[in-house]
Image (tube, rainbow, N blue to C red):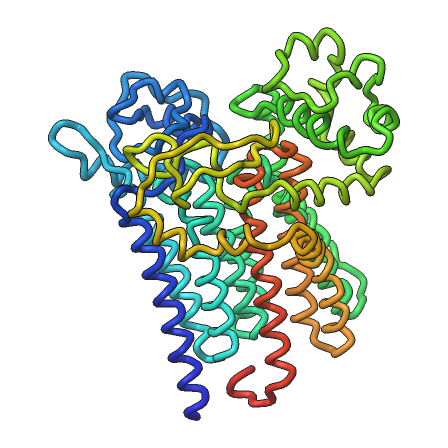
Length: 503
């Protein structure tokens, strides 16, 4: 083993250790740093019959002013269960919290999230352990984990939101793919463990229900292109039918839940998307409504509005079809007017304020106090407006200074637009270059990173418009960073011919 390889492995270990310390210290911050409950946590709180000790109303109502650390058992629980794999994580979280409850029944969410944090870190380190055989793989993966172990993602840790488990599964999936890229795991092993991670992610929330199928189609296409053609056997055909059927399960589960209206209000999502985002961005709103099968006479008046600013009764009276509009109808309109997406991306770049939400509090025991220690505007999707004033909480400032978010906010609008399109379209160009250089694994990884980013972005904006885009599109940060880490790793692998280093 050369000194070069030993030094690279040591550096990778240090980087991952720093990432681990970063996550653990954020979890341990006092006062607690987390997102307040903007309703979505109610889905889980009702299932387990919990409410904040100091706010009993939170079992039924949102508490956007601050996050709560201490919970008690409520008399009412077992509400309709939202079909989410995150409930498996939260069941462990609830069991841990209940096992260590205080004598008066008080339960601490910081204790509850220990298994999720340790489980995620253990998975990362187990994957990393295999990568030490290829220092380039170890350095790239450790660097990516360090970047994504950021308050942008960690603010979801000490909460009942589903976002942290989605982030954890996404990082483990990328780790499995990274092992395959450097030939440290077999194709079969990568497919099995990758499918497990993606299945959890696809069932995390209805936004991700198409992700497993999308990645499966990419994998299937890559296998068809890279392998010699041969006549499929009956057994092989049956296997693929079963795989496709399994990939459809998340879609079927969420469609069934939507029909029963179990915490899935597709009408609200479609209304936000069409009227607050697509129509204002369209050069011909009338034509776009016609593409969706909506009558312009009654519907055009709602351009720039949504169900949060207009009562549902008005939509029912003048544009009732919007409440039953399918995602296919939305996609059809966008395909026929793709220039709309250019305007939407420009709007996001112009009005975004990083990845942090500012209509809900971040700091325990302080109303509308934010981790960035200042009042600023936020892009909440209903309108571009100033955020609420907040208290000065100096102890939170160091954590924000460790975040990438301040840098994101300093990037000029034009550069932000270019970065978004670079991460959306760049992977395809990088894959073509890798393919021409006969680096098929790298080509696939670039395509995979592009698919993940584009899915996270467009499932957000076409799923609920601009509303809470910082939360819905939060994985865009992780997958966008992944592309640049891949690009750097690929460049190093091309210029460094040391097989011990690059593998």
